[in-house]
Image 1: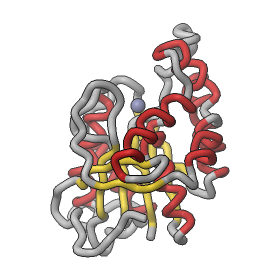
Image 2 (image 1 turned 120 degrees about the horizontal axis):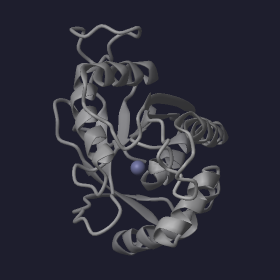
Image 3 (image 1 turned 120 degrees about the vertical axis):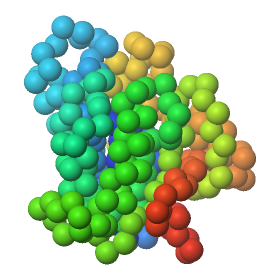
Image 4 (image 1 turned 180 degrees about the horizontal axis):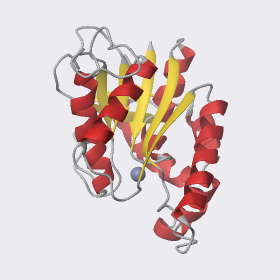
Amino acid sequence: MNTVSIMAHADDEMRCLGALLKCRARGDRLYFVTVTDGSKGFVQRPEIERAEAAAIRHAEMSALAAAAGGEYINLGEPDEFLYDTPEVRMKLIEAIRQAGAELIFTHYHEDYNADHIAVNRLVHHCAMQASLPVLPTASAPLAAPPAIFQCEPFGAIHFPASYYVDISAYHEEKVRLLLHHASQETAMQMAVGSGFAGLCERPEAFRGEQAGCRYAEAFIPMPGRGTIKPYPVLP
Ligand SMILES: [Zn+2]
């Protein structure tokens, strides 16, 4: 299966990376798509130029994707100012086709960050359009719409999880991979007082307790045309 994380920013794959690694173990090919350039992620250097910040984020995400054995597609939209435009839709439709997406993980429809919500809506629309020939792009339309699962958001947002993936065997590798985002480890320590280890440990242990394992990631299927499958897709 071709399994794709579609997120607003590099490091947002944090809430599905364990499931992605478990998908890889069953033979899936992994793709990481980020819609923005991540250039507003430097809490520690607010004066940094957009191009320099974007280059650092791109290098970090590329290193993570390579280490995870996946491919990275960066759509390069302006961080913190992502809007649903015809150009962004066409870029995302092409990325979904390029990956041959069969399973997508993306943001939940409620979130603290407007870019995340924009990506949720874009994926909802573009995943369906990716299988239709009416919007031609460089790659051929998908044979069928992909299955889509929404990931748990940060903070005080109600997330009625309905699917759980036991990632106990992948927790350590996941945290190690996320540390490729060195700039964000620093930024998050400054912004929320916790790095990747803490940000993964707490929700995964909580969801693991609910699911009867040590560490789990939790998901909600995204209803849409063809996005709910009559066969199991999660590992
Ligand atoms: Zn984000």
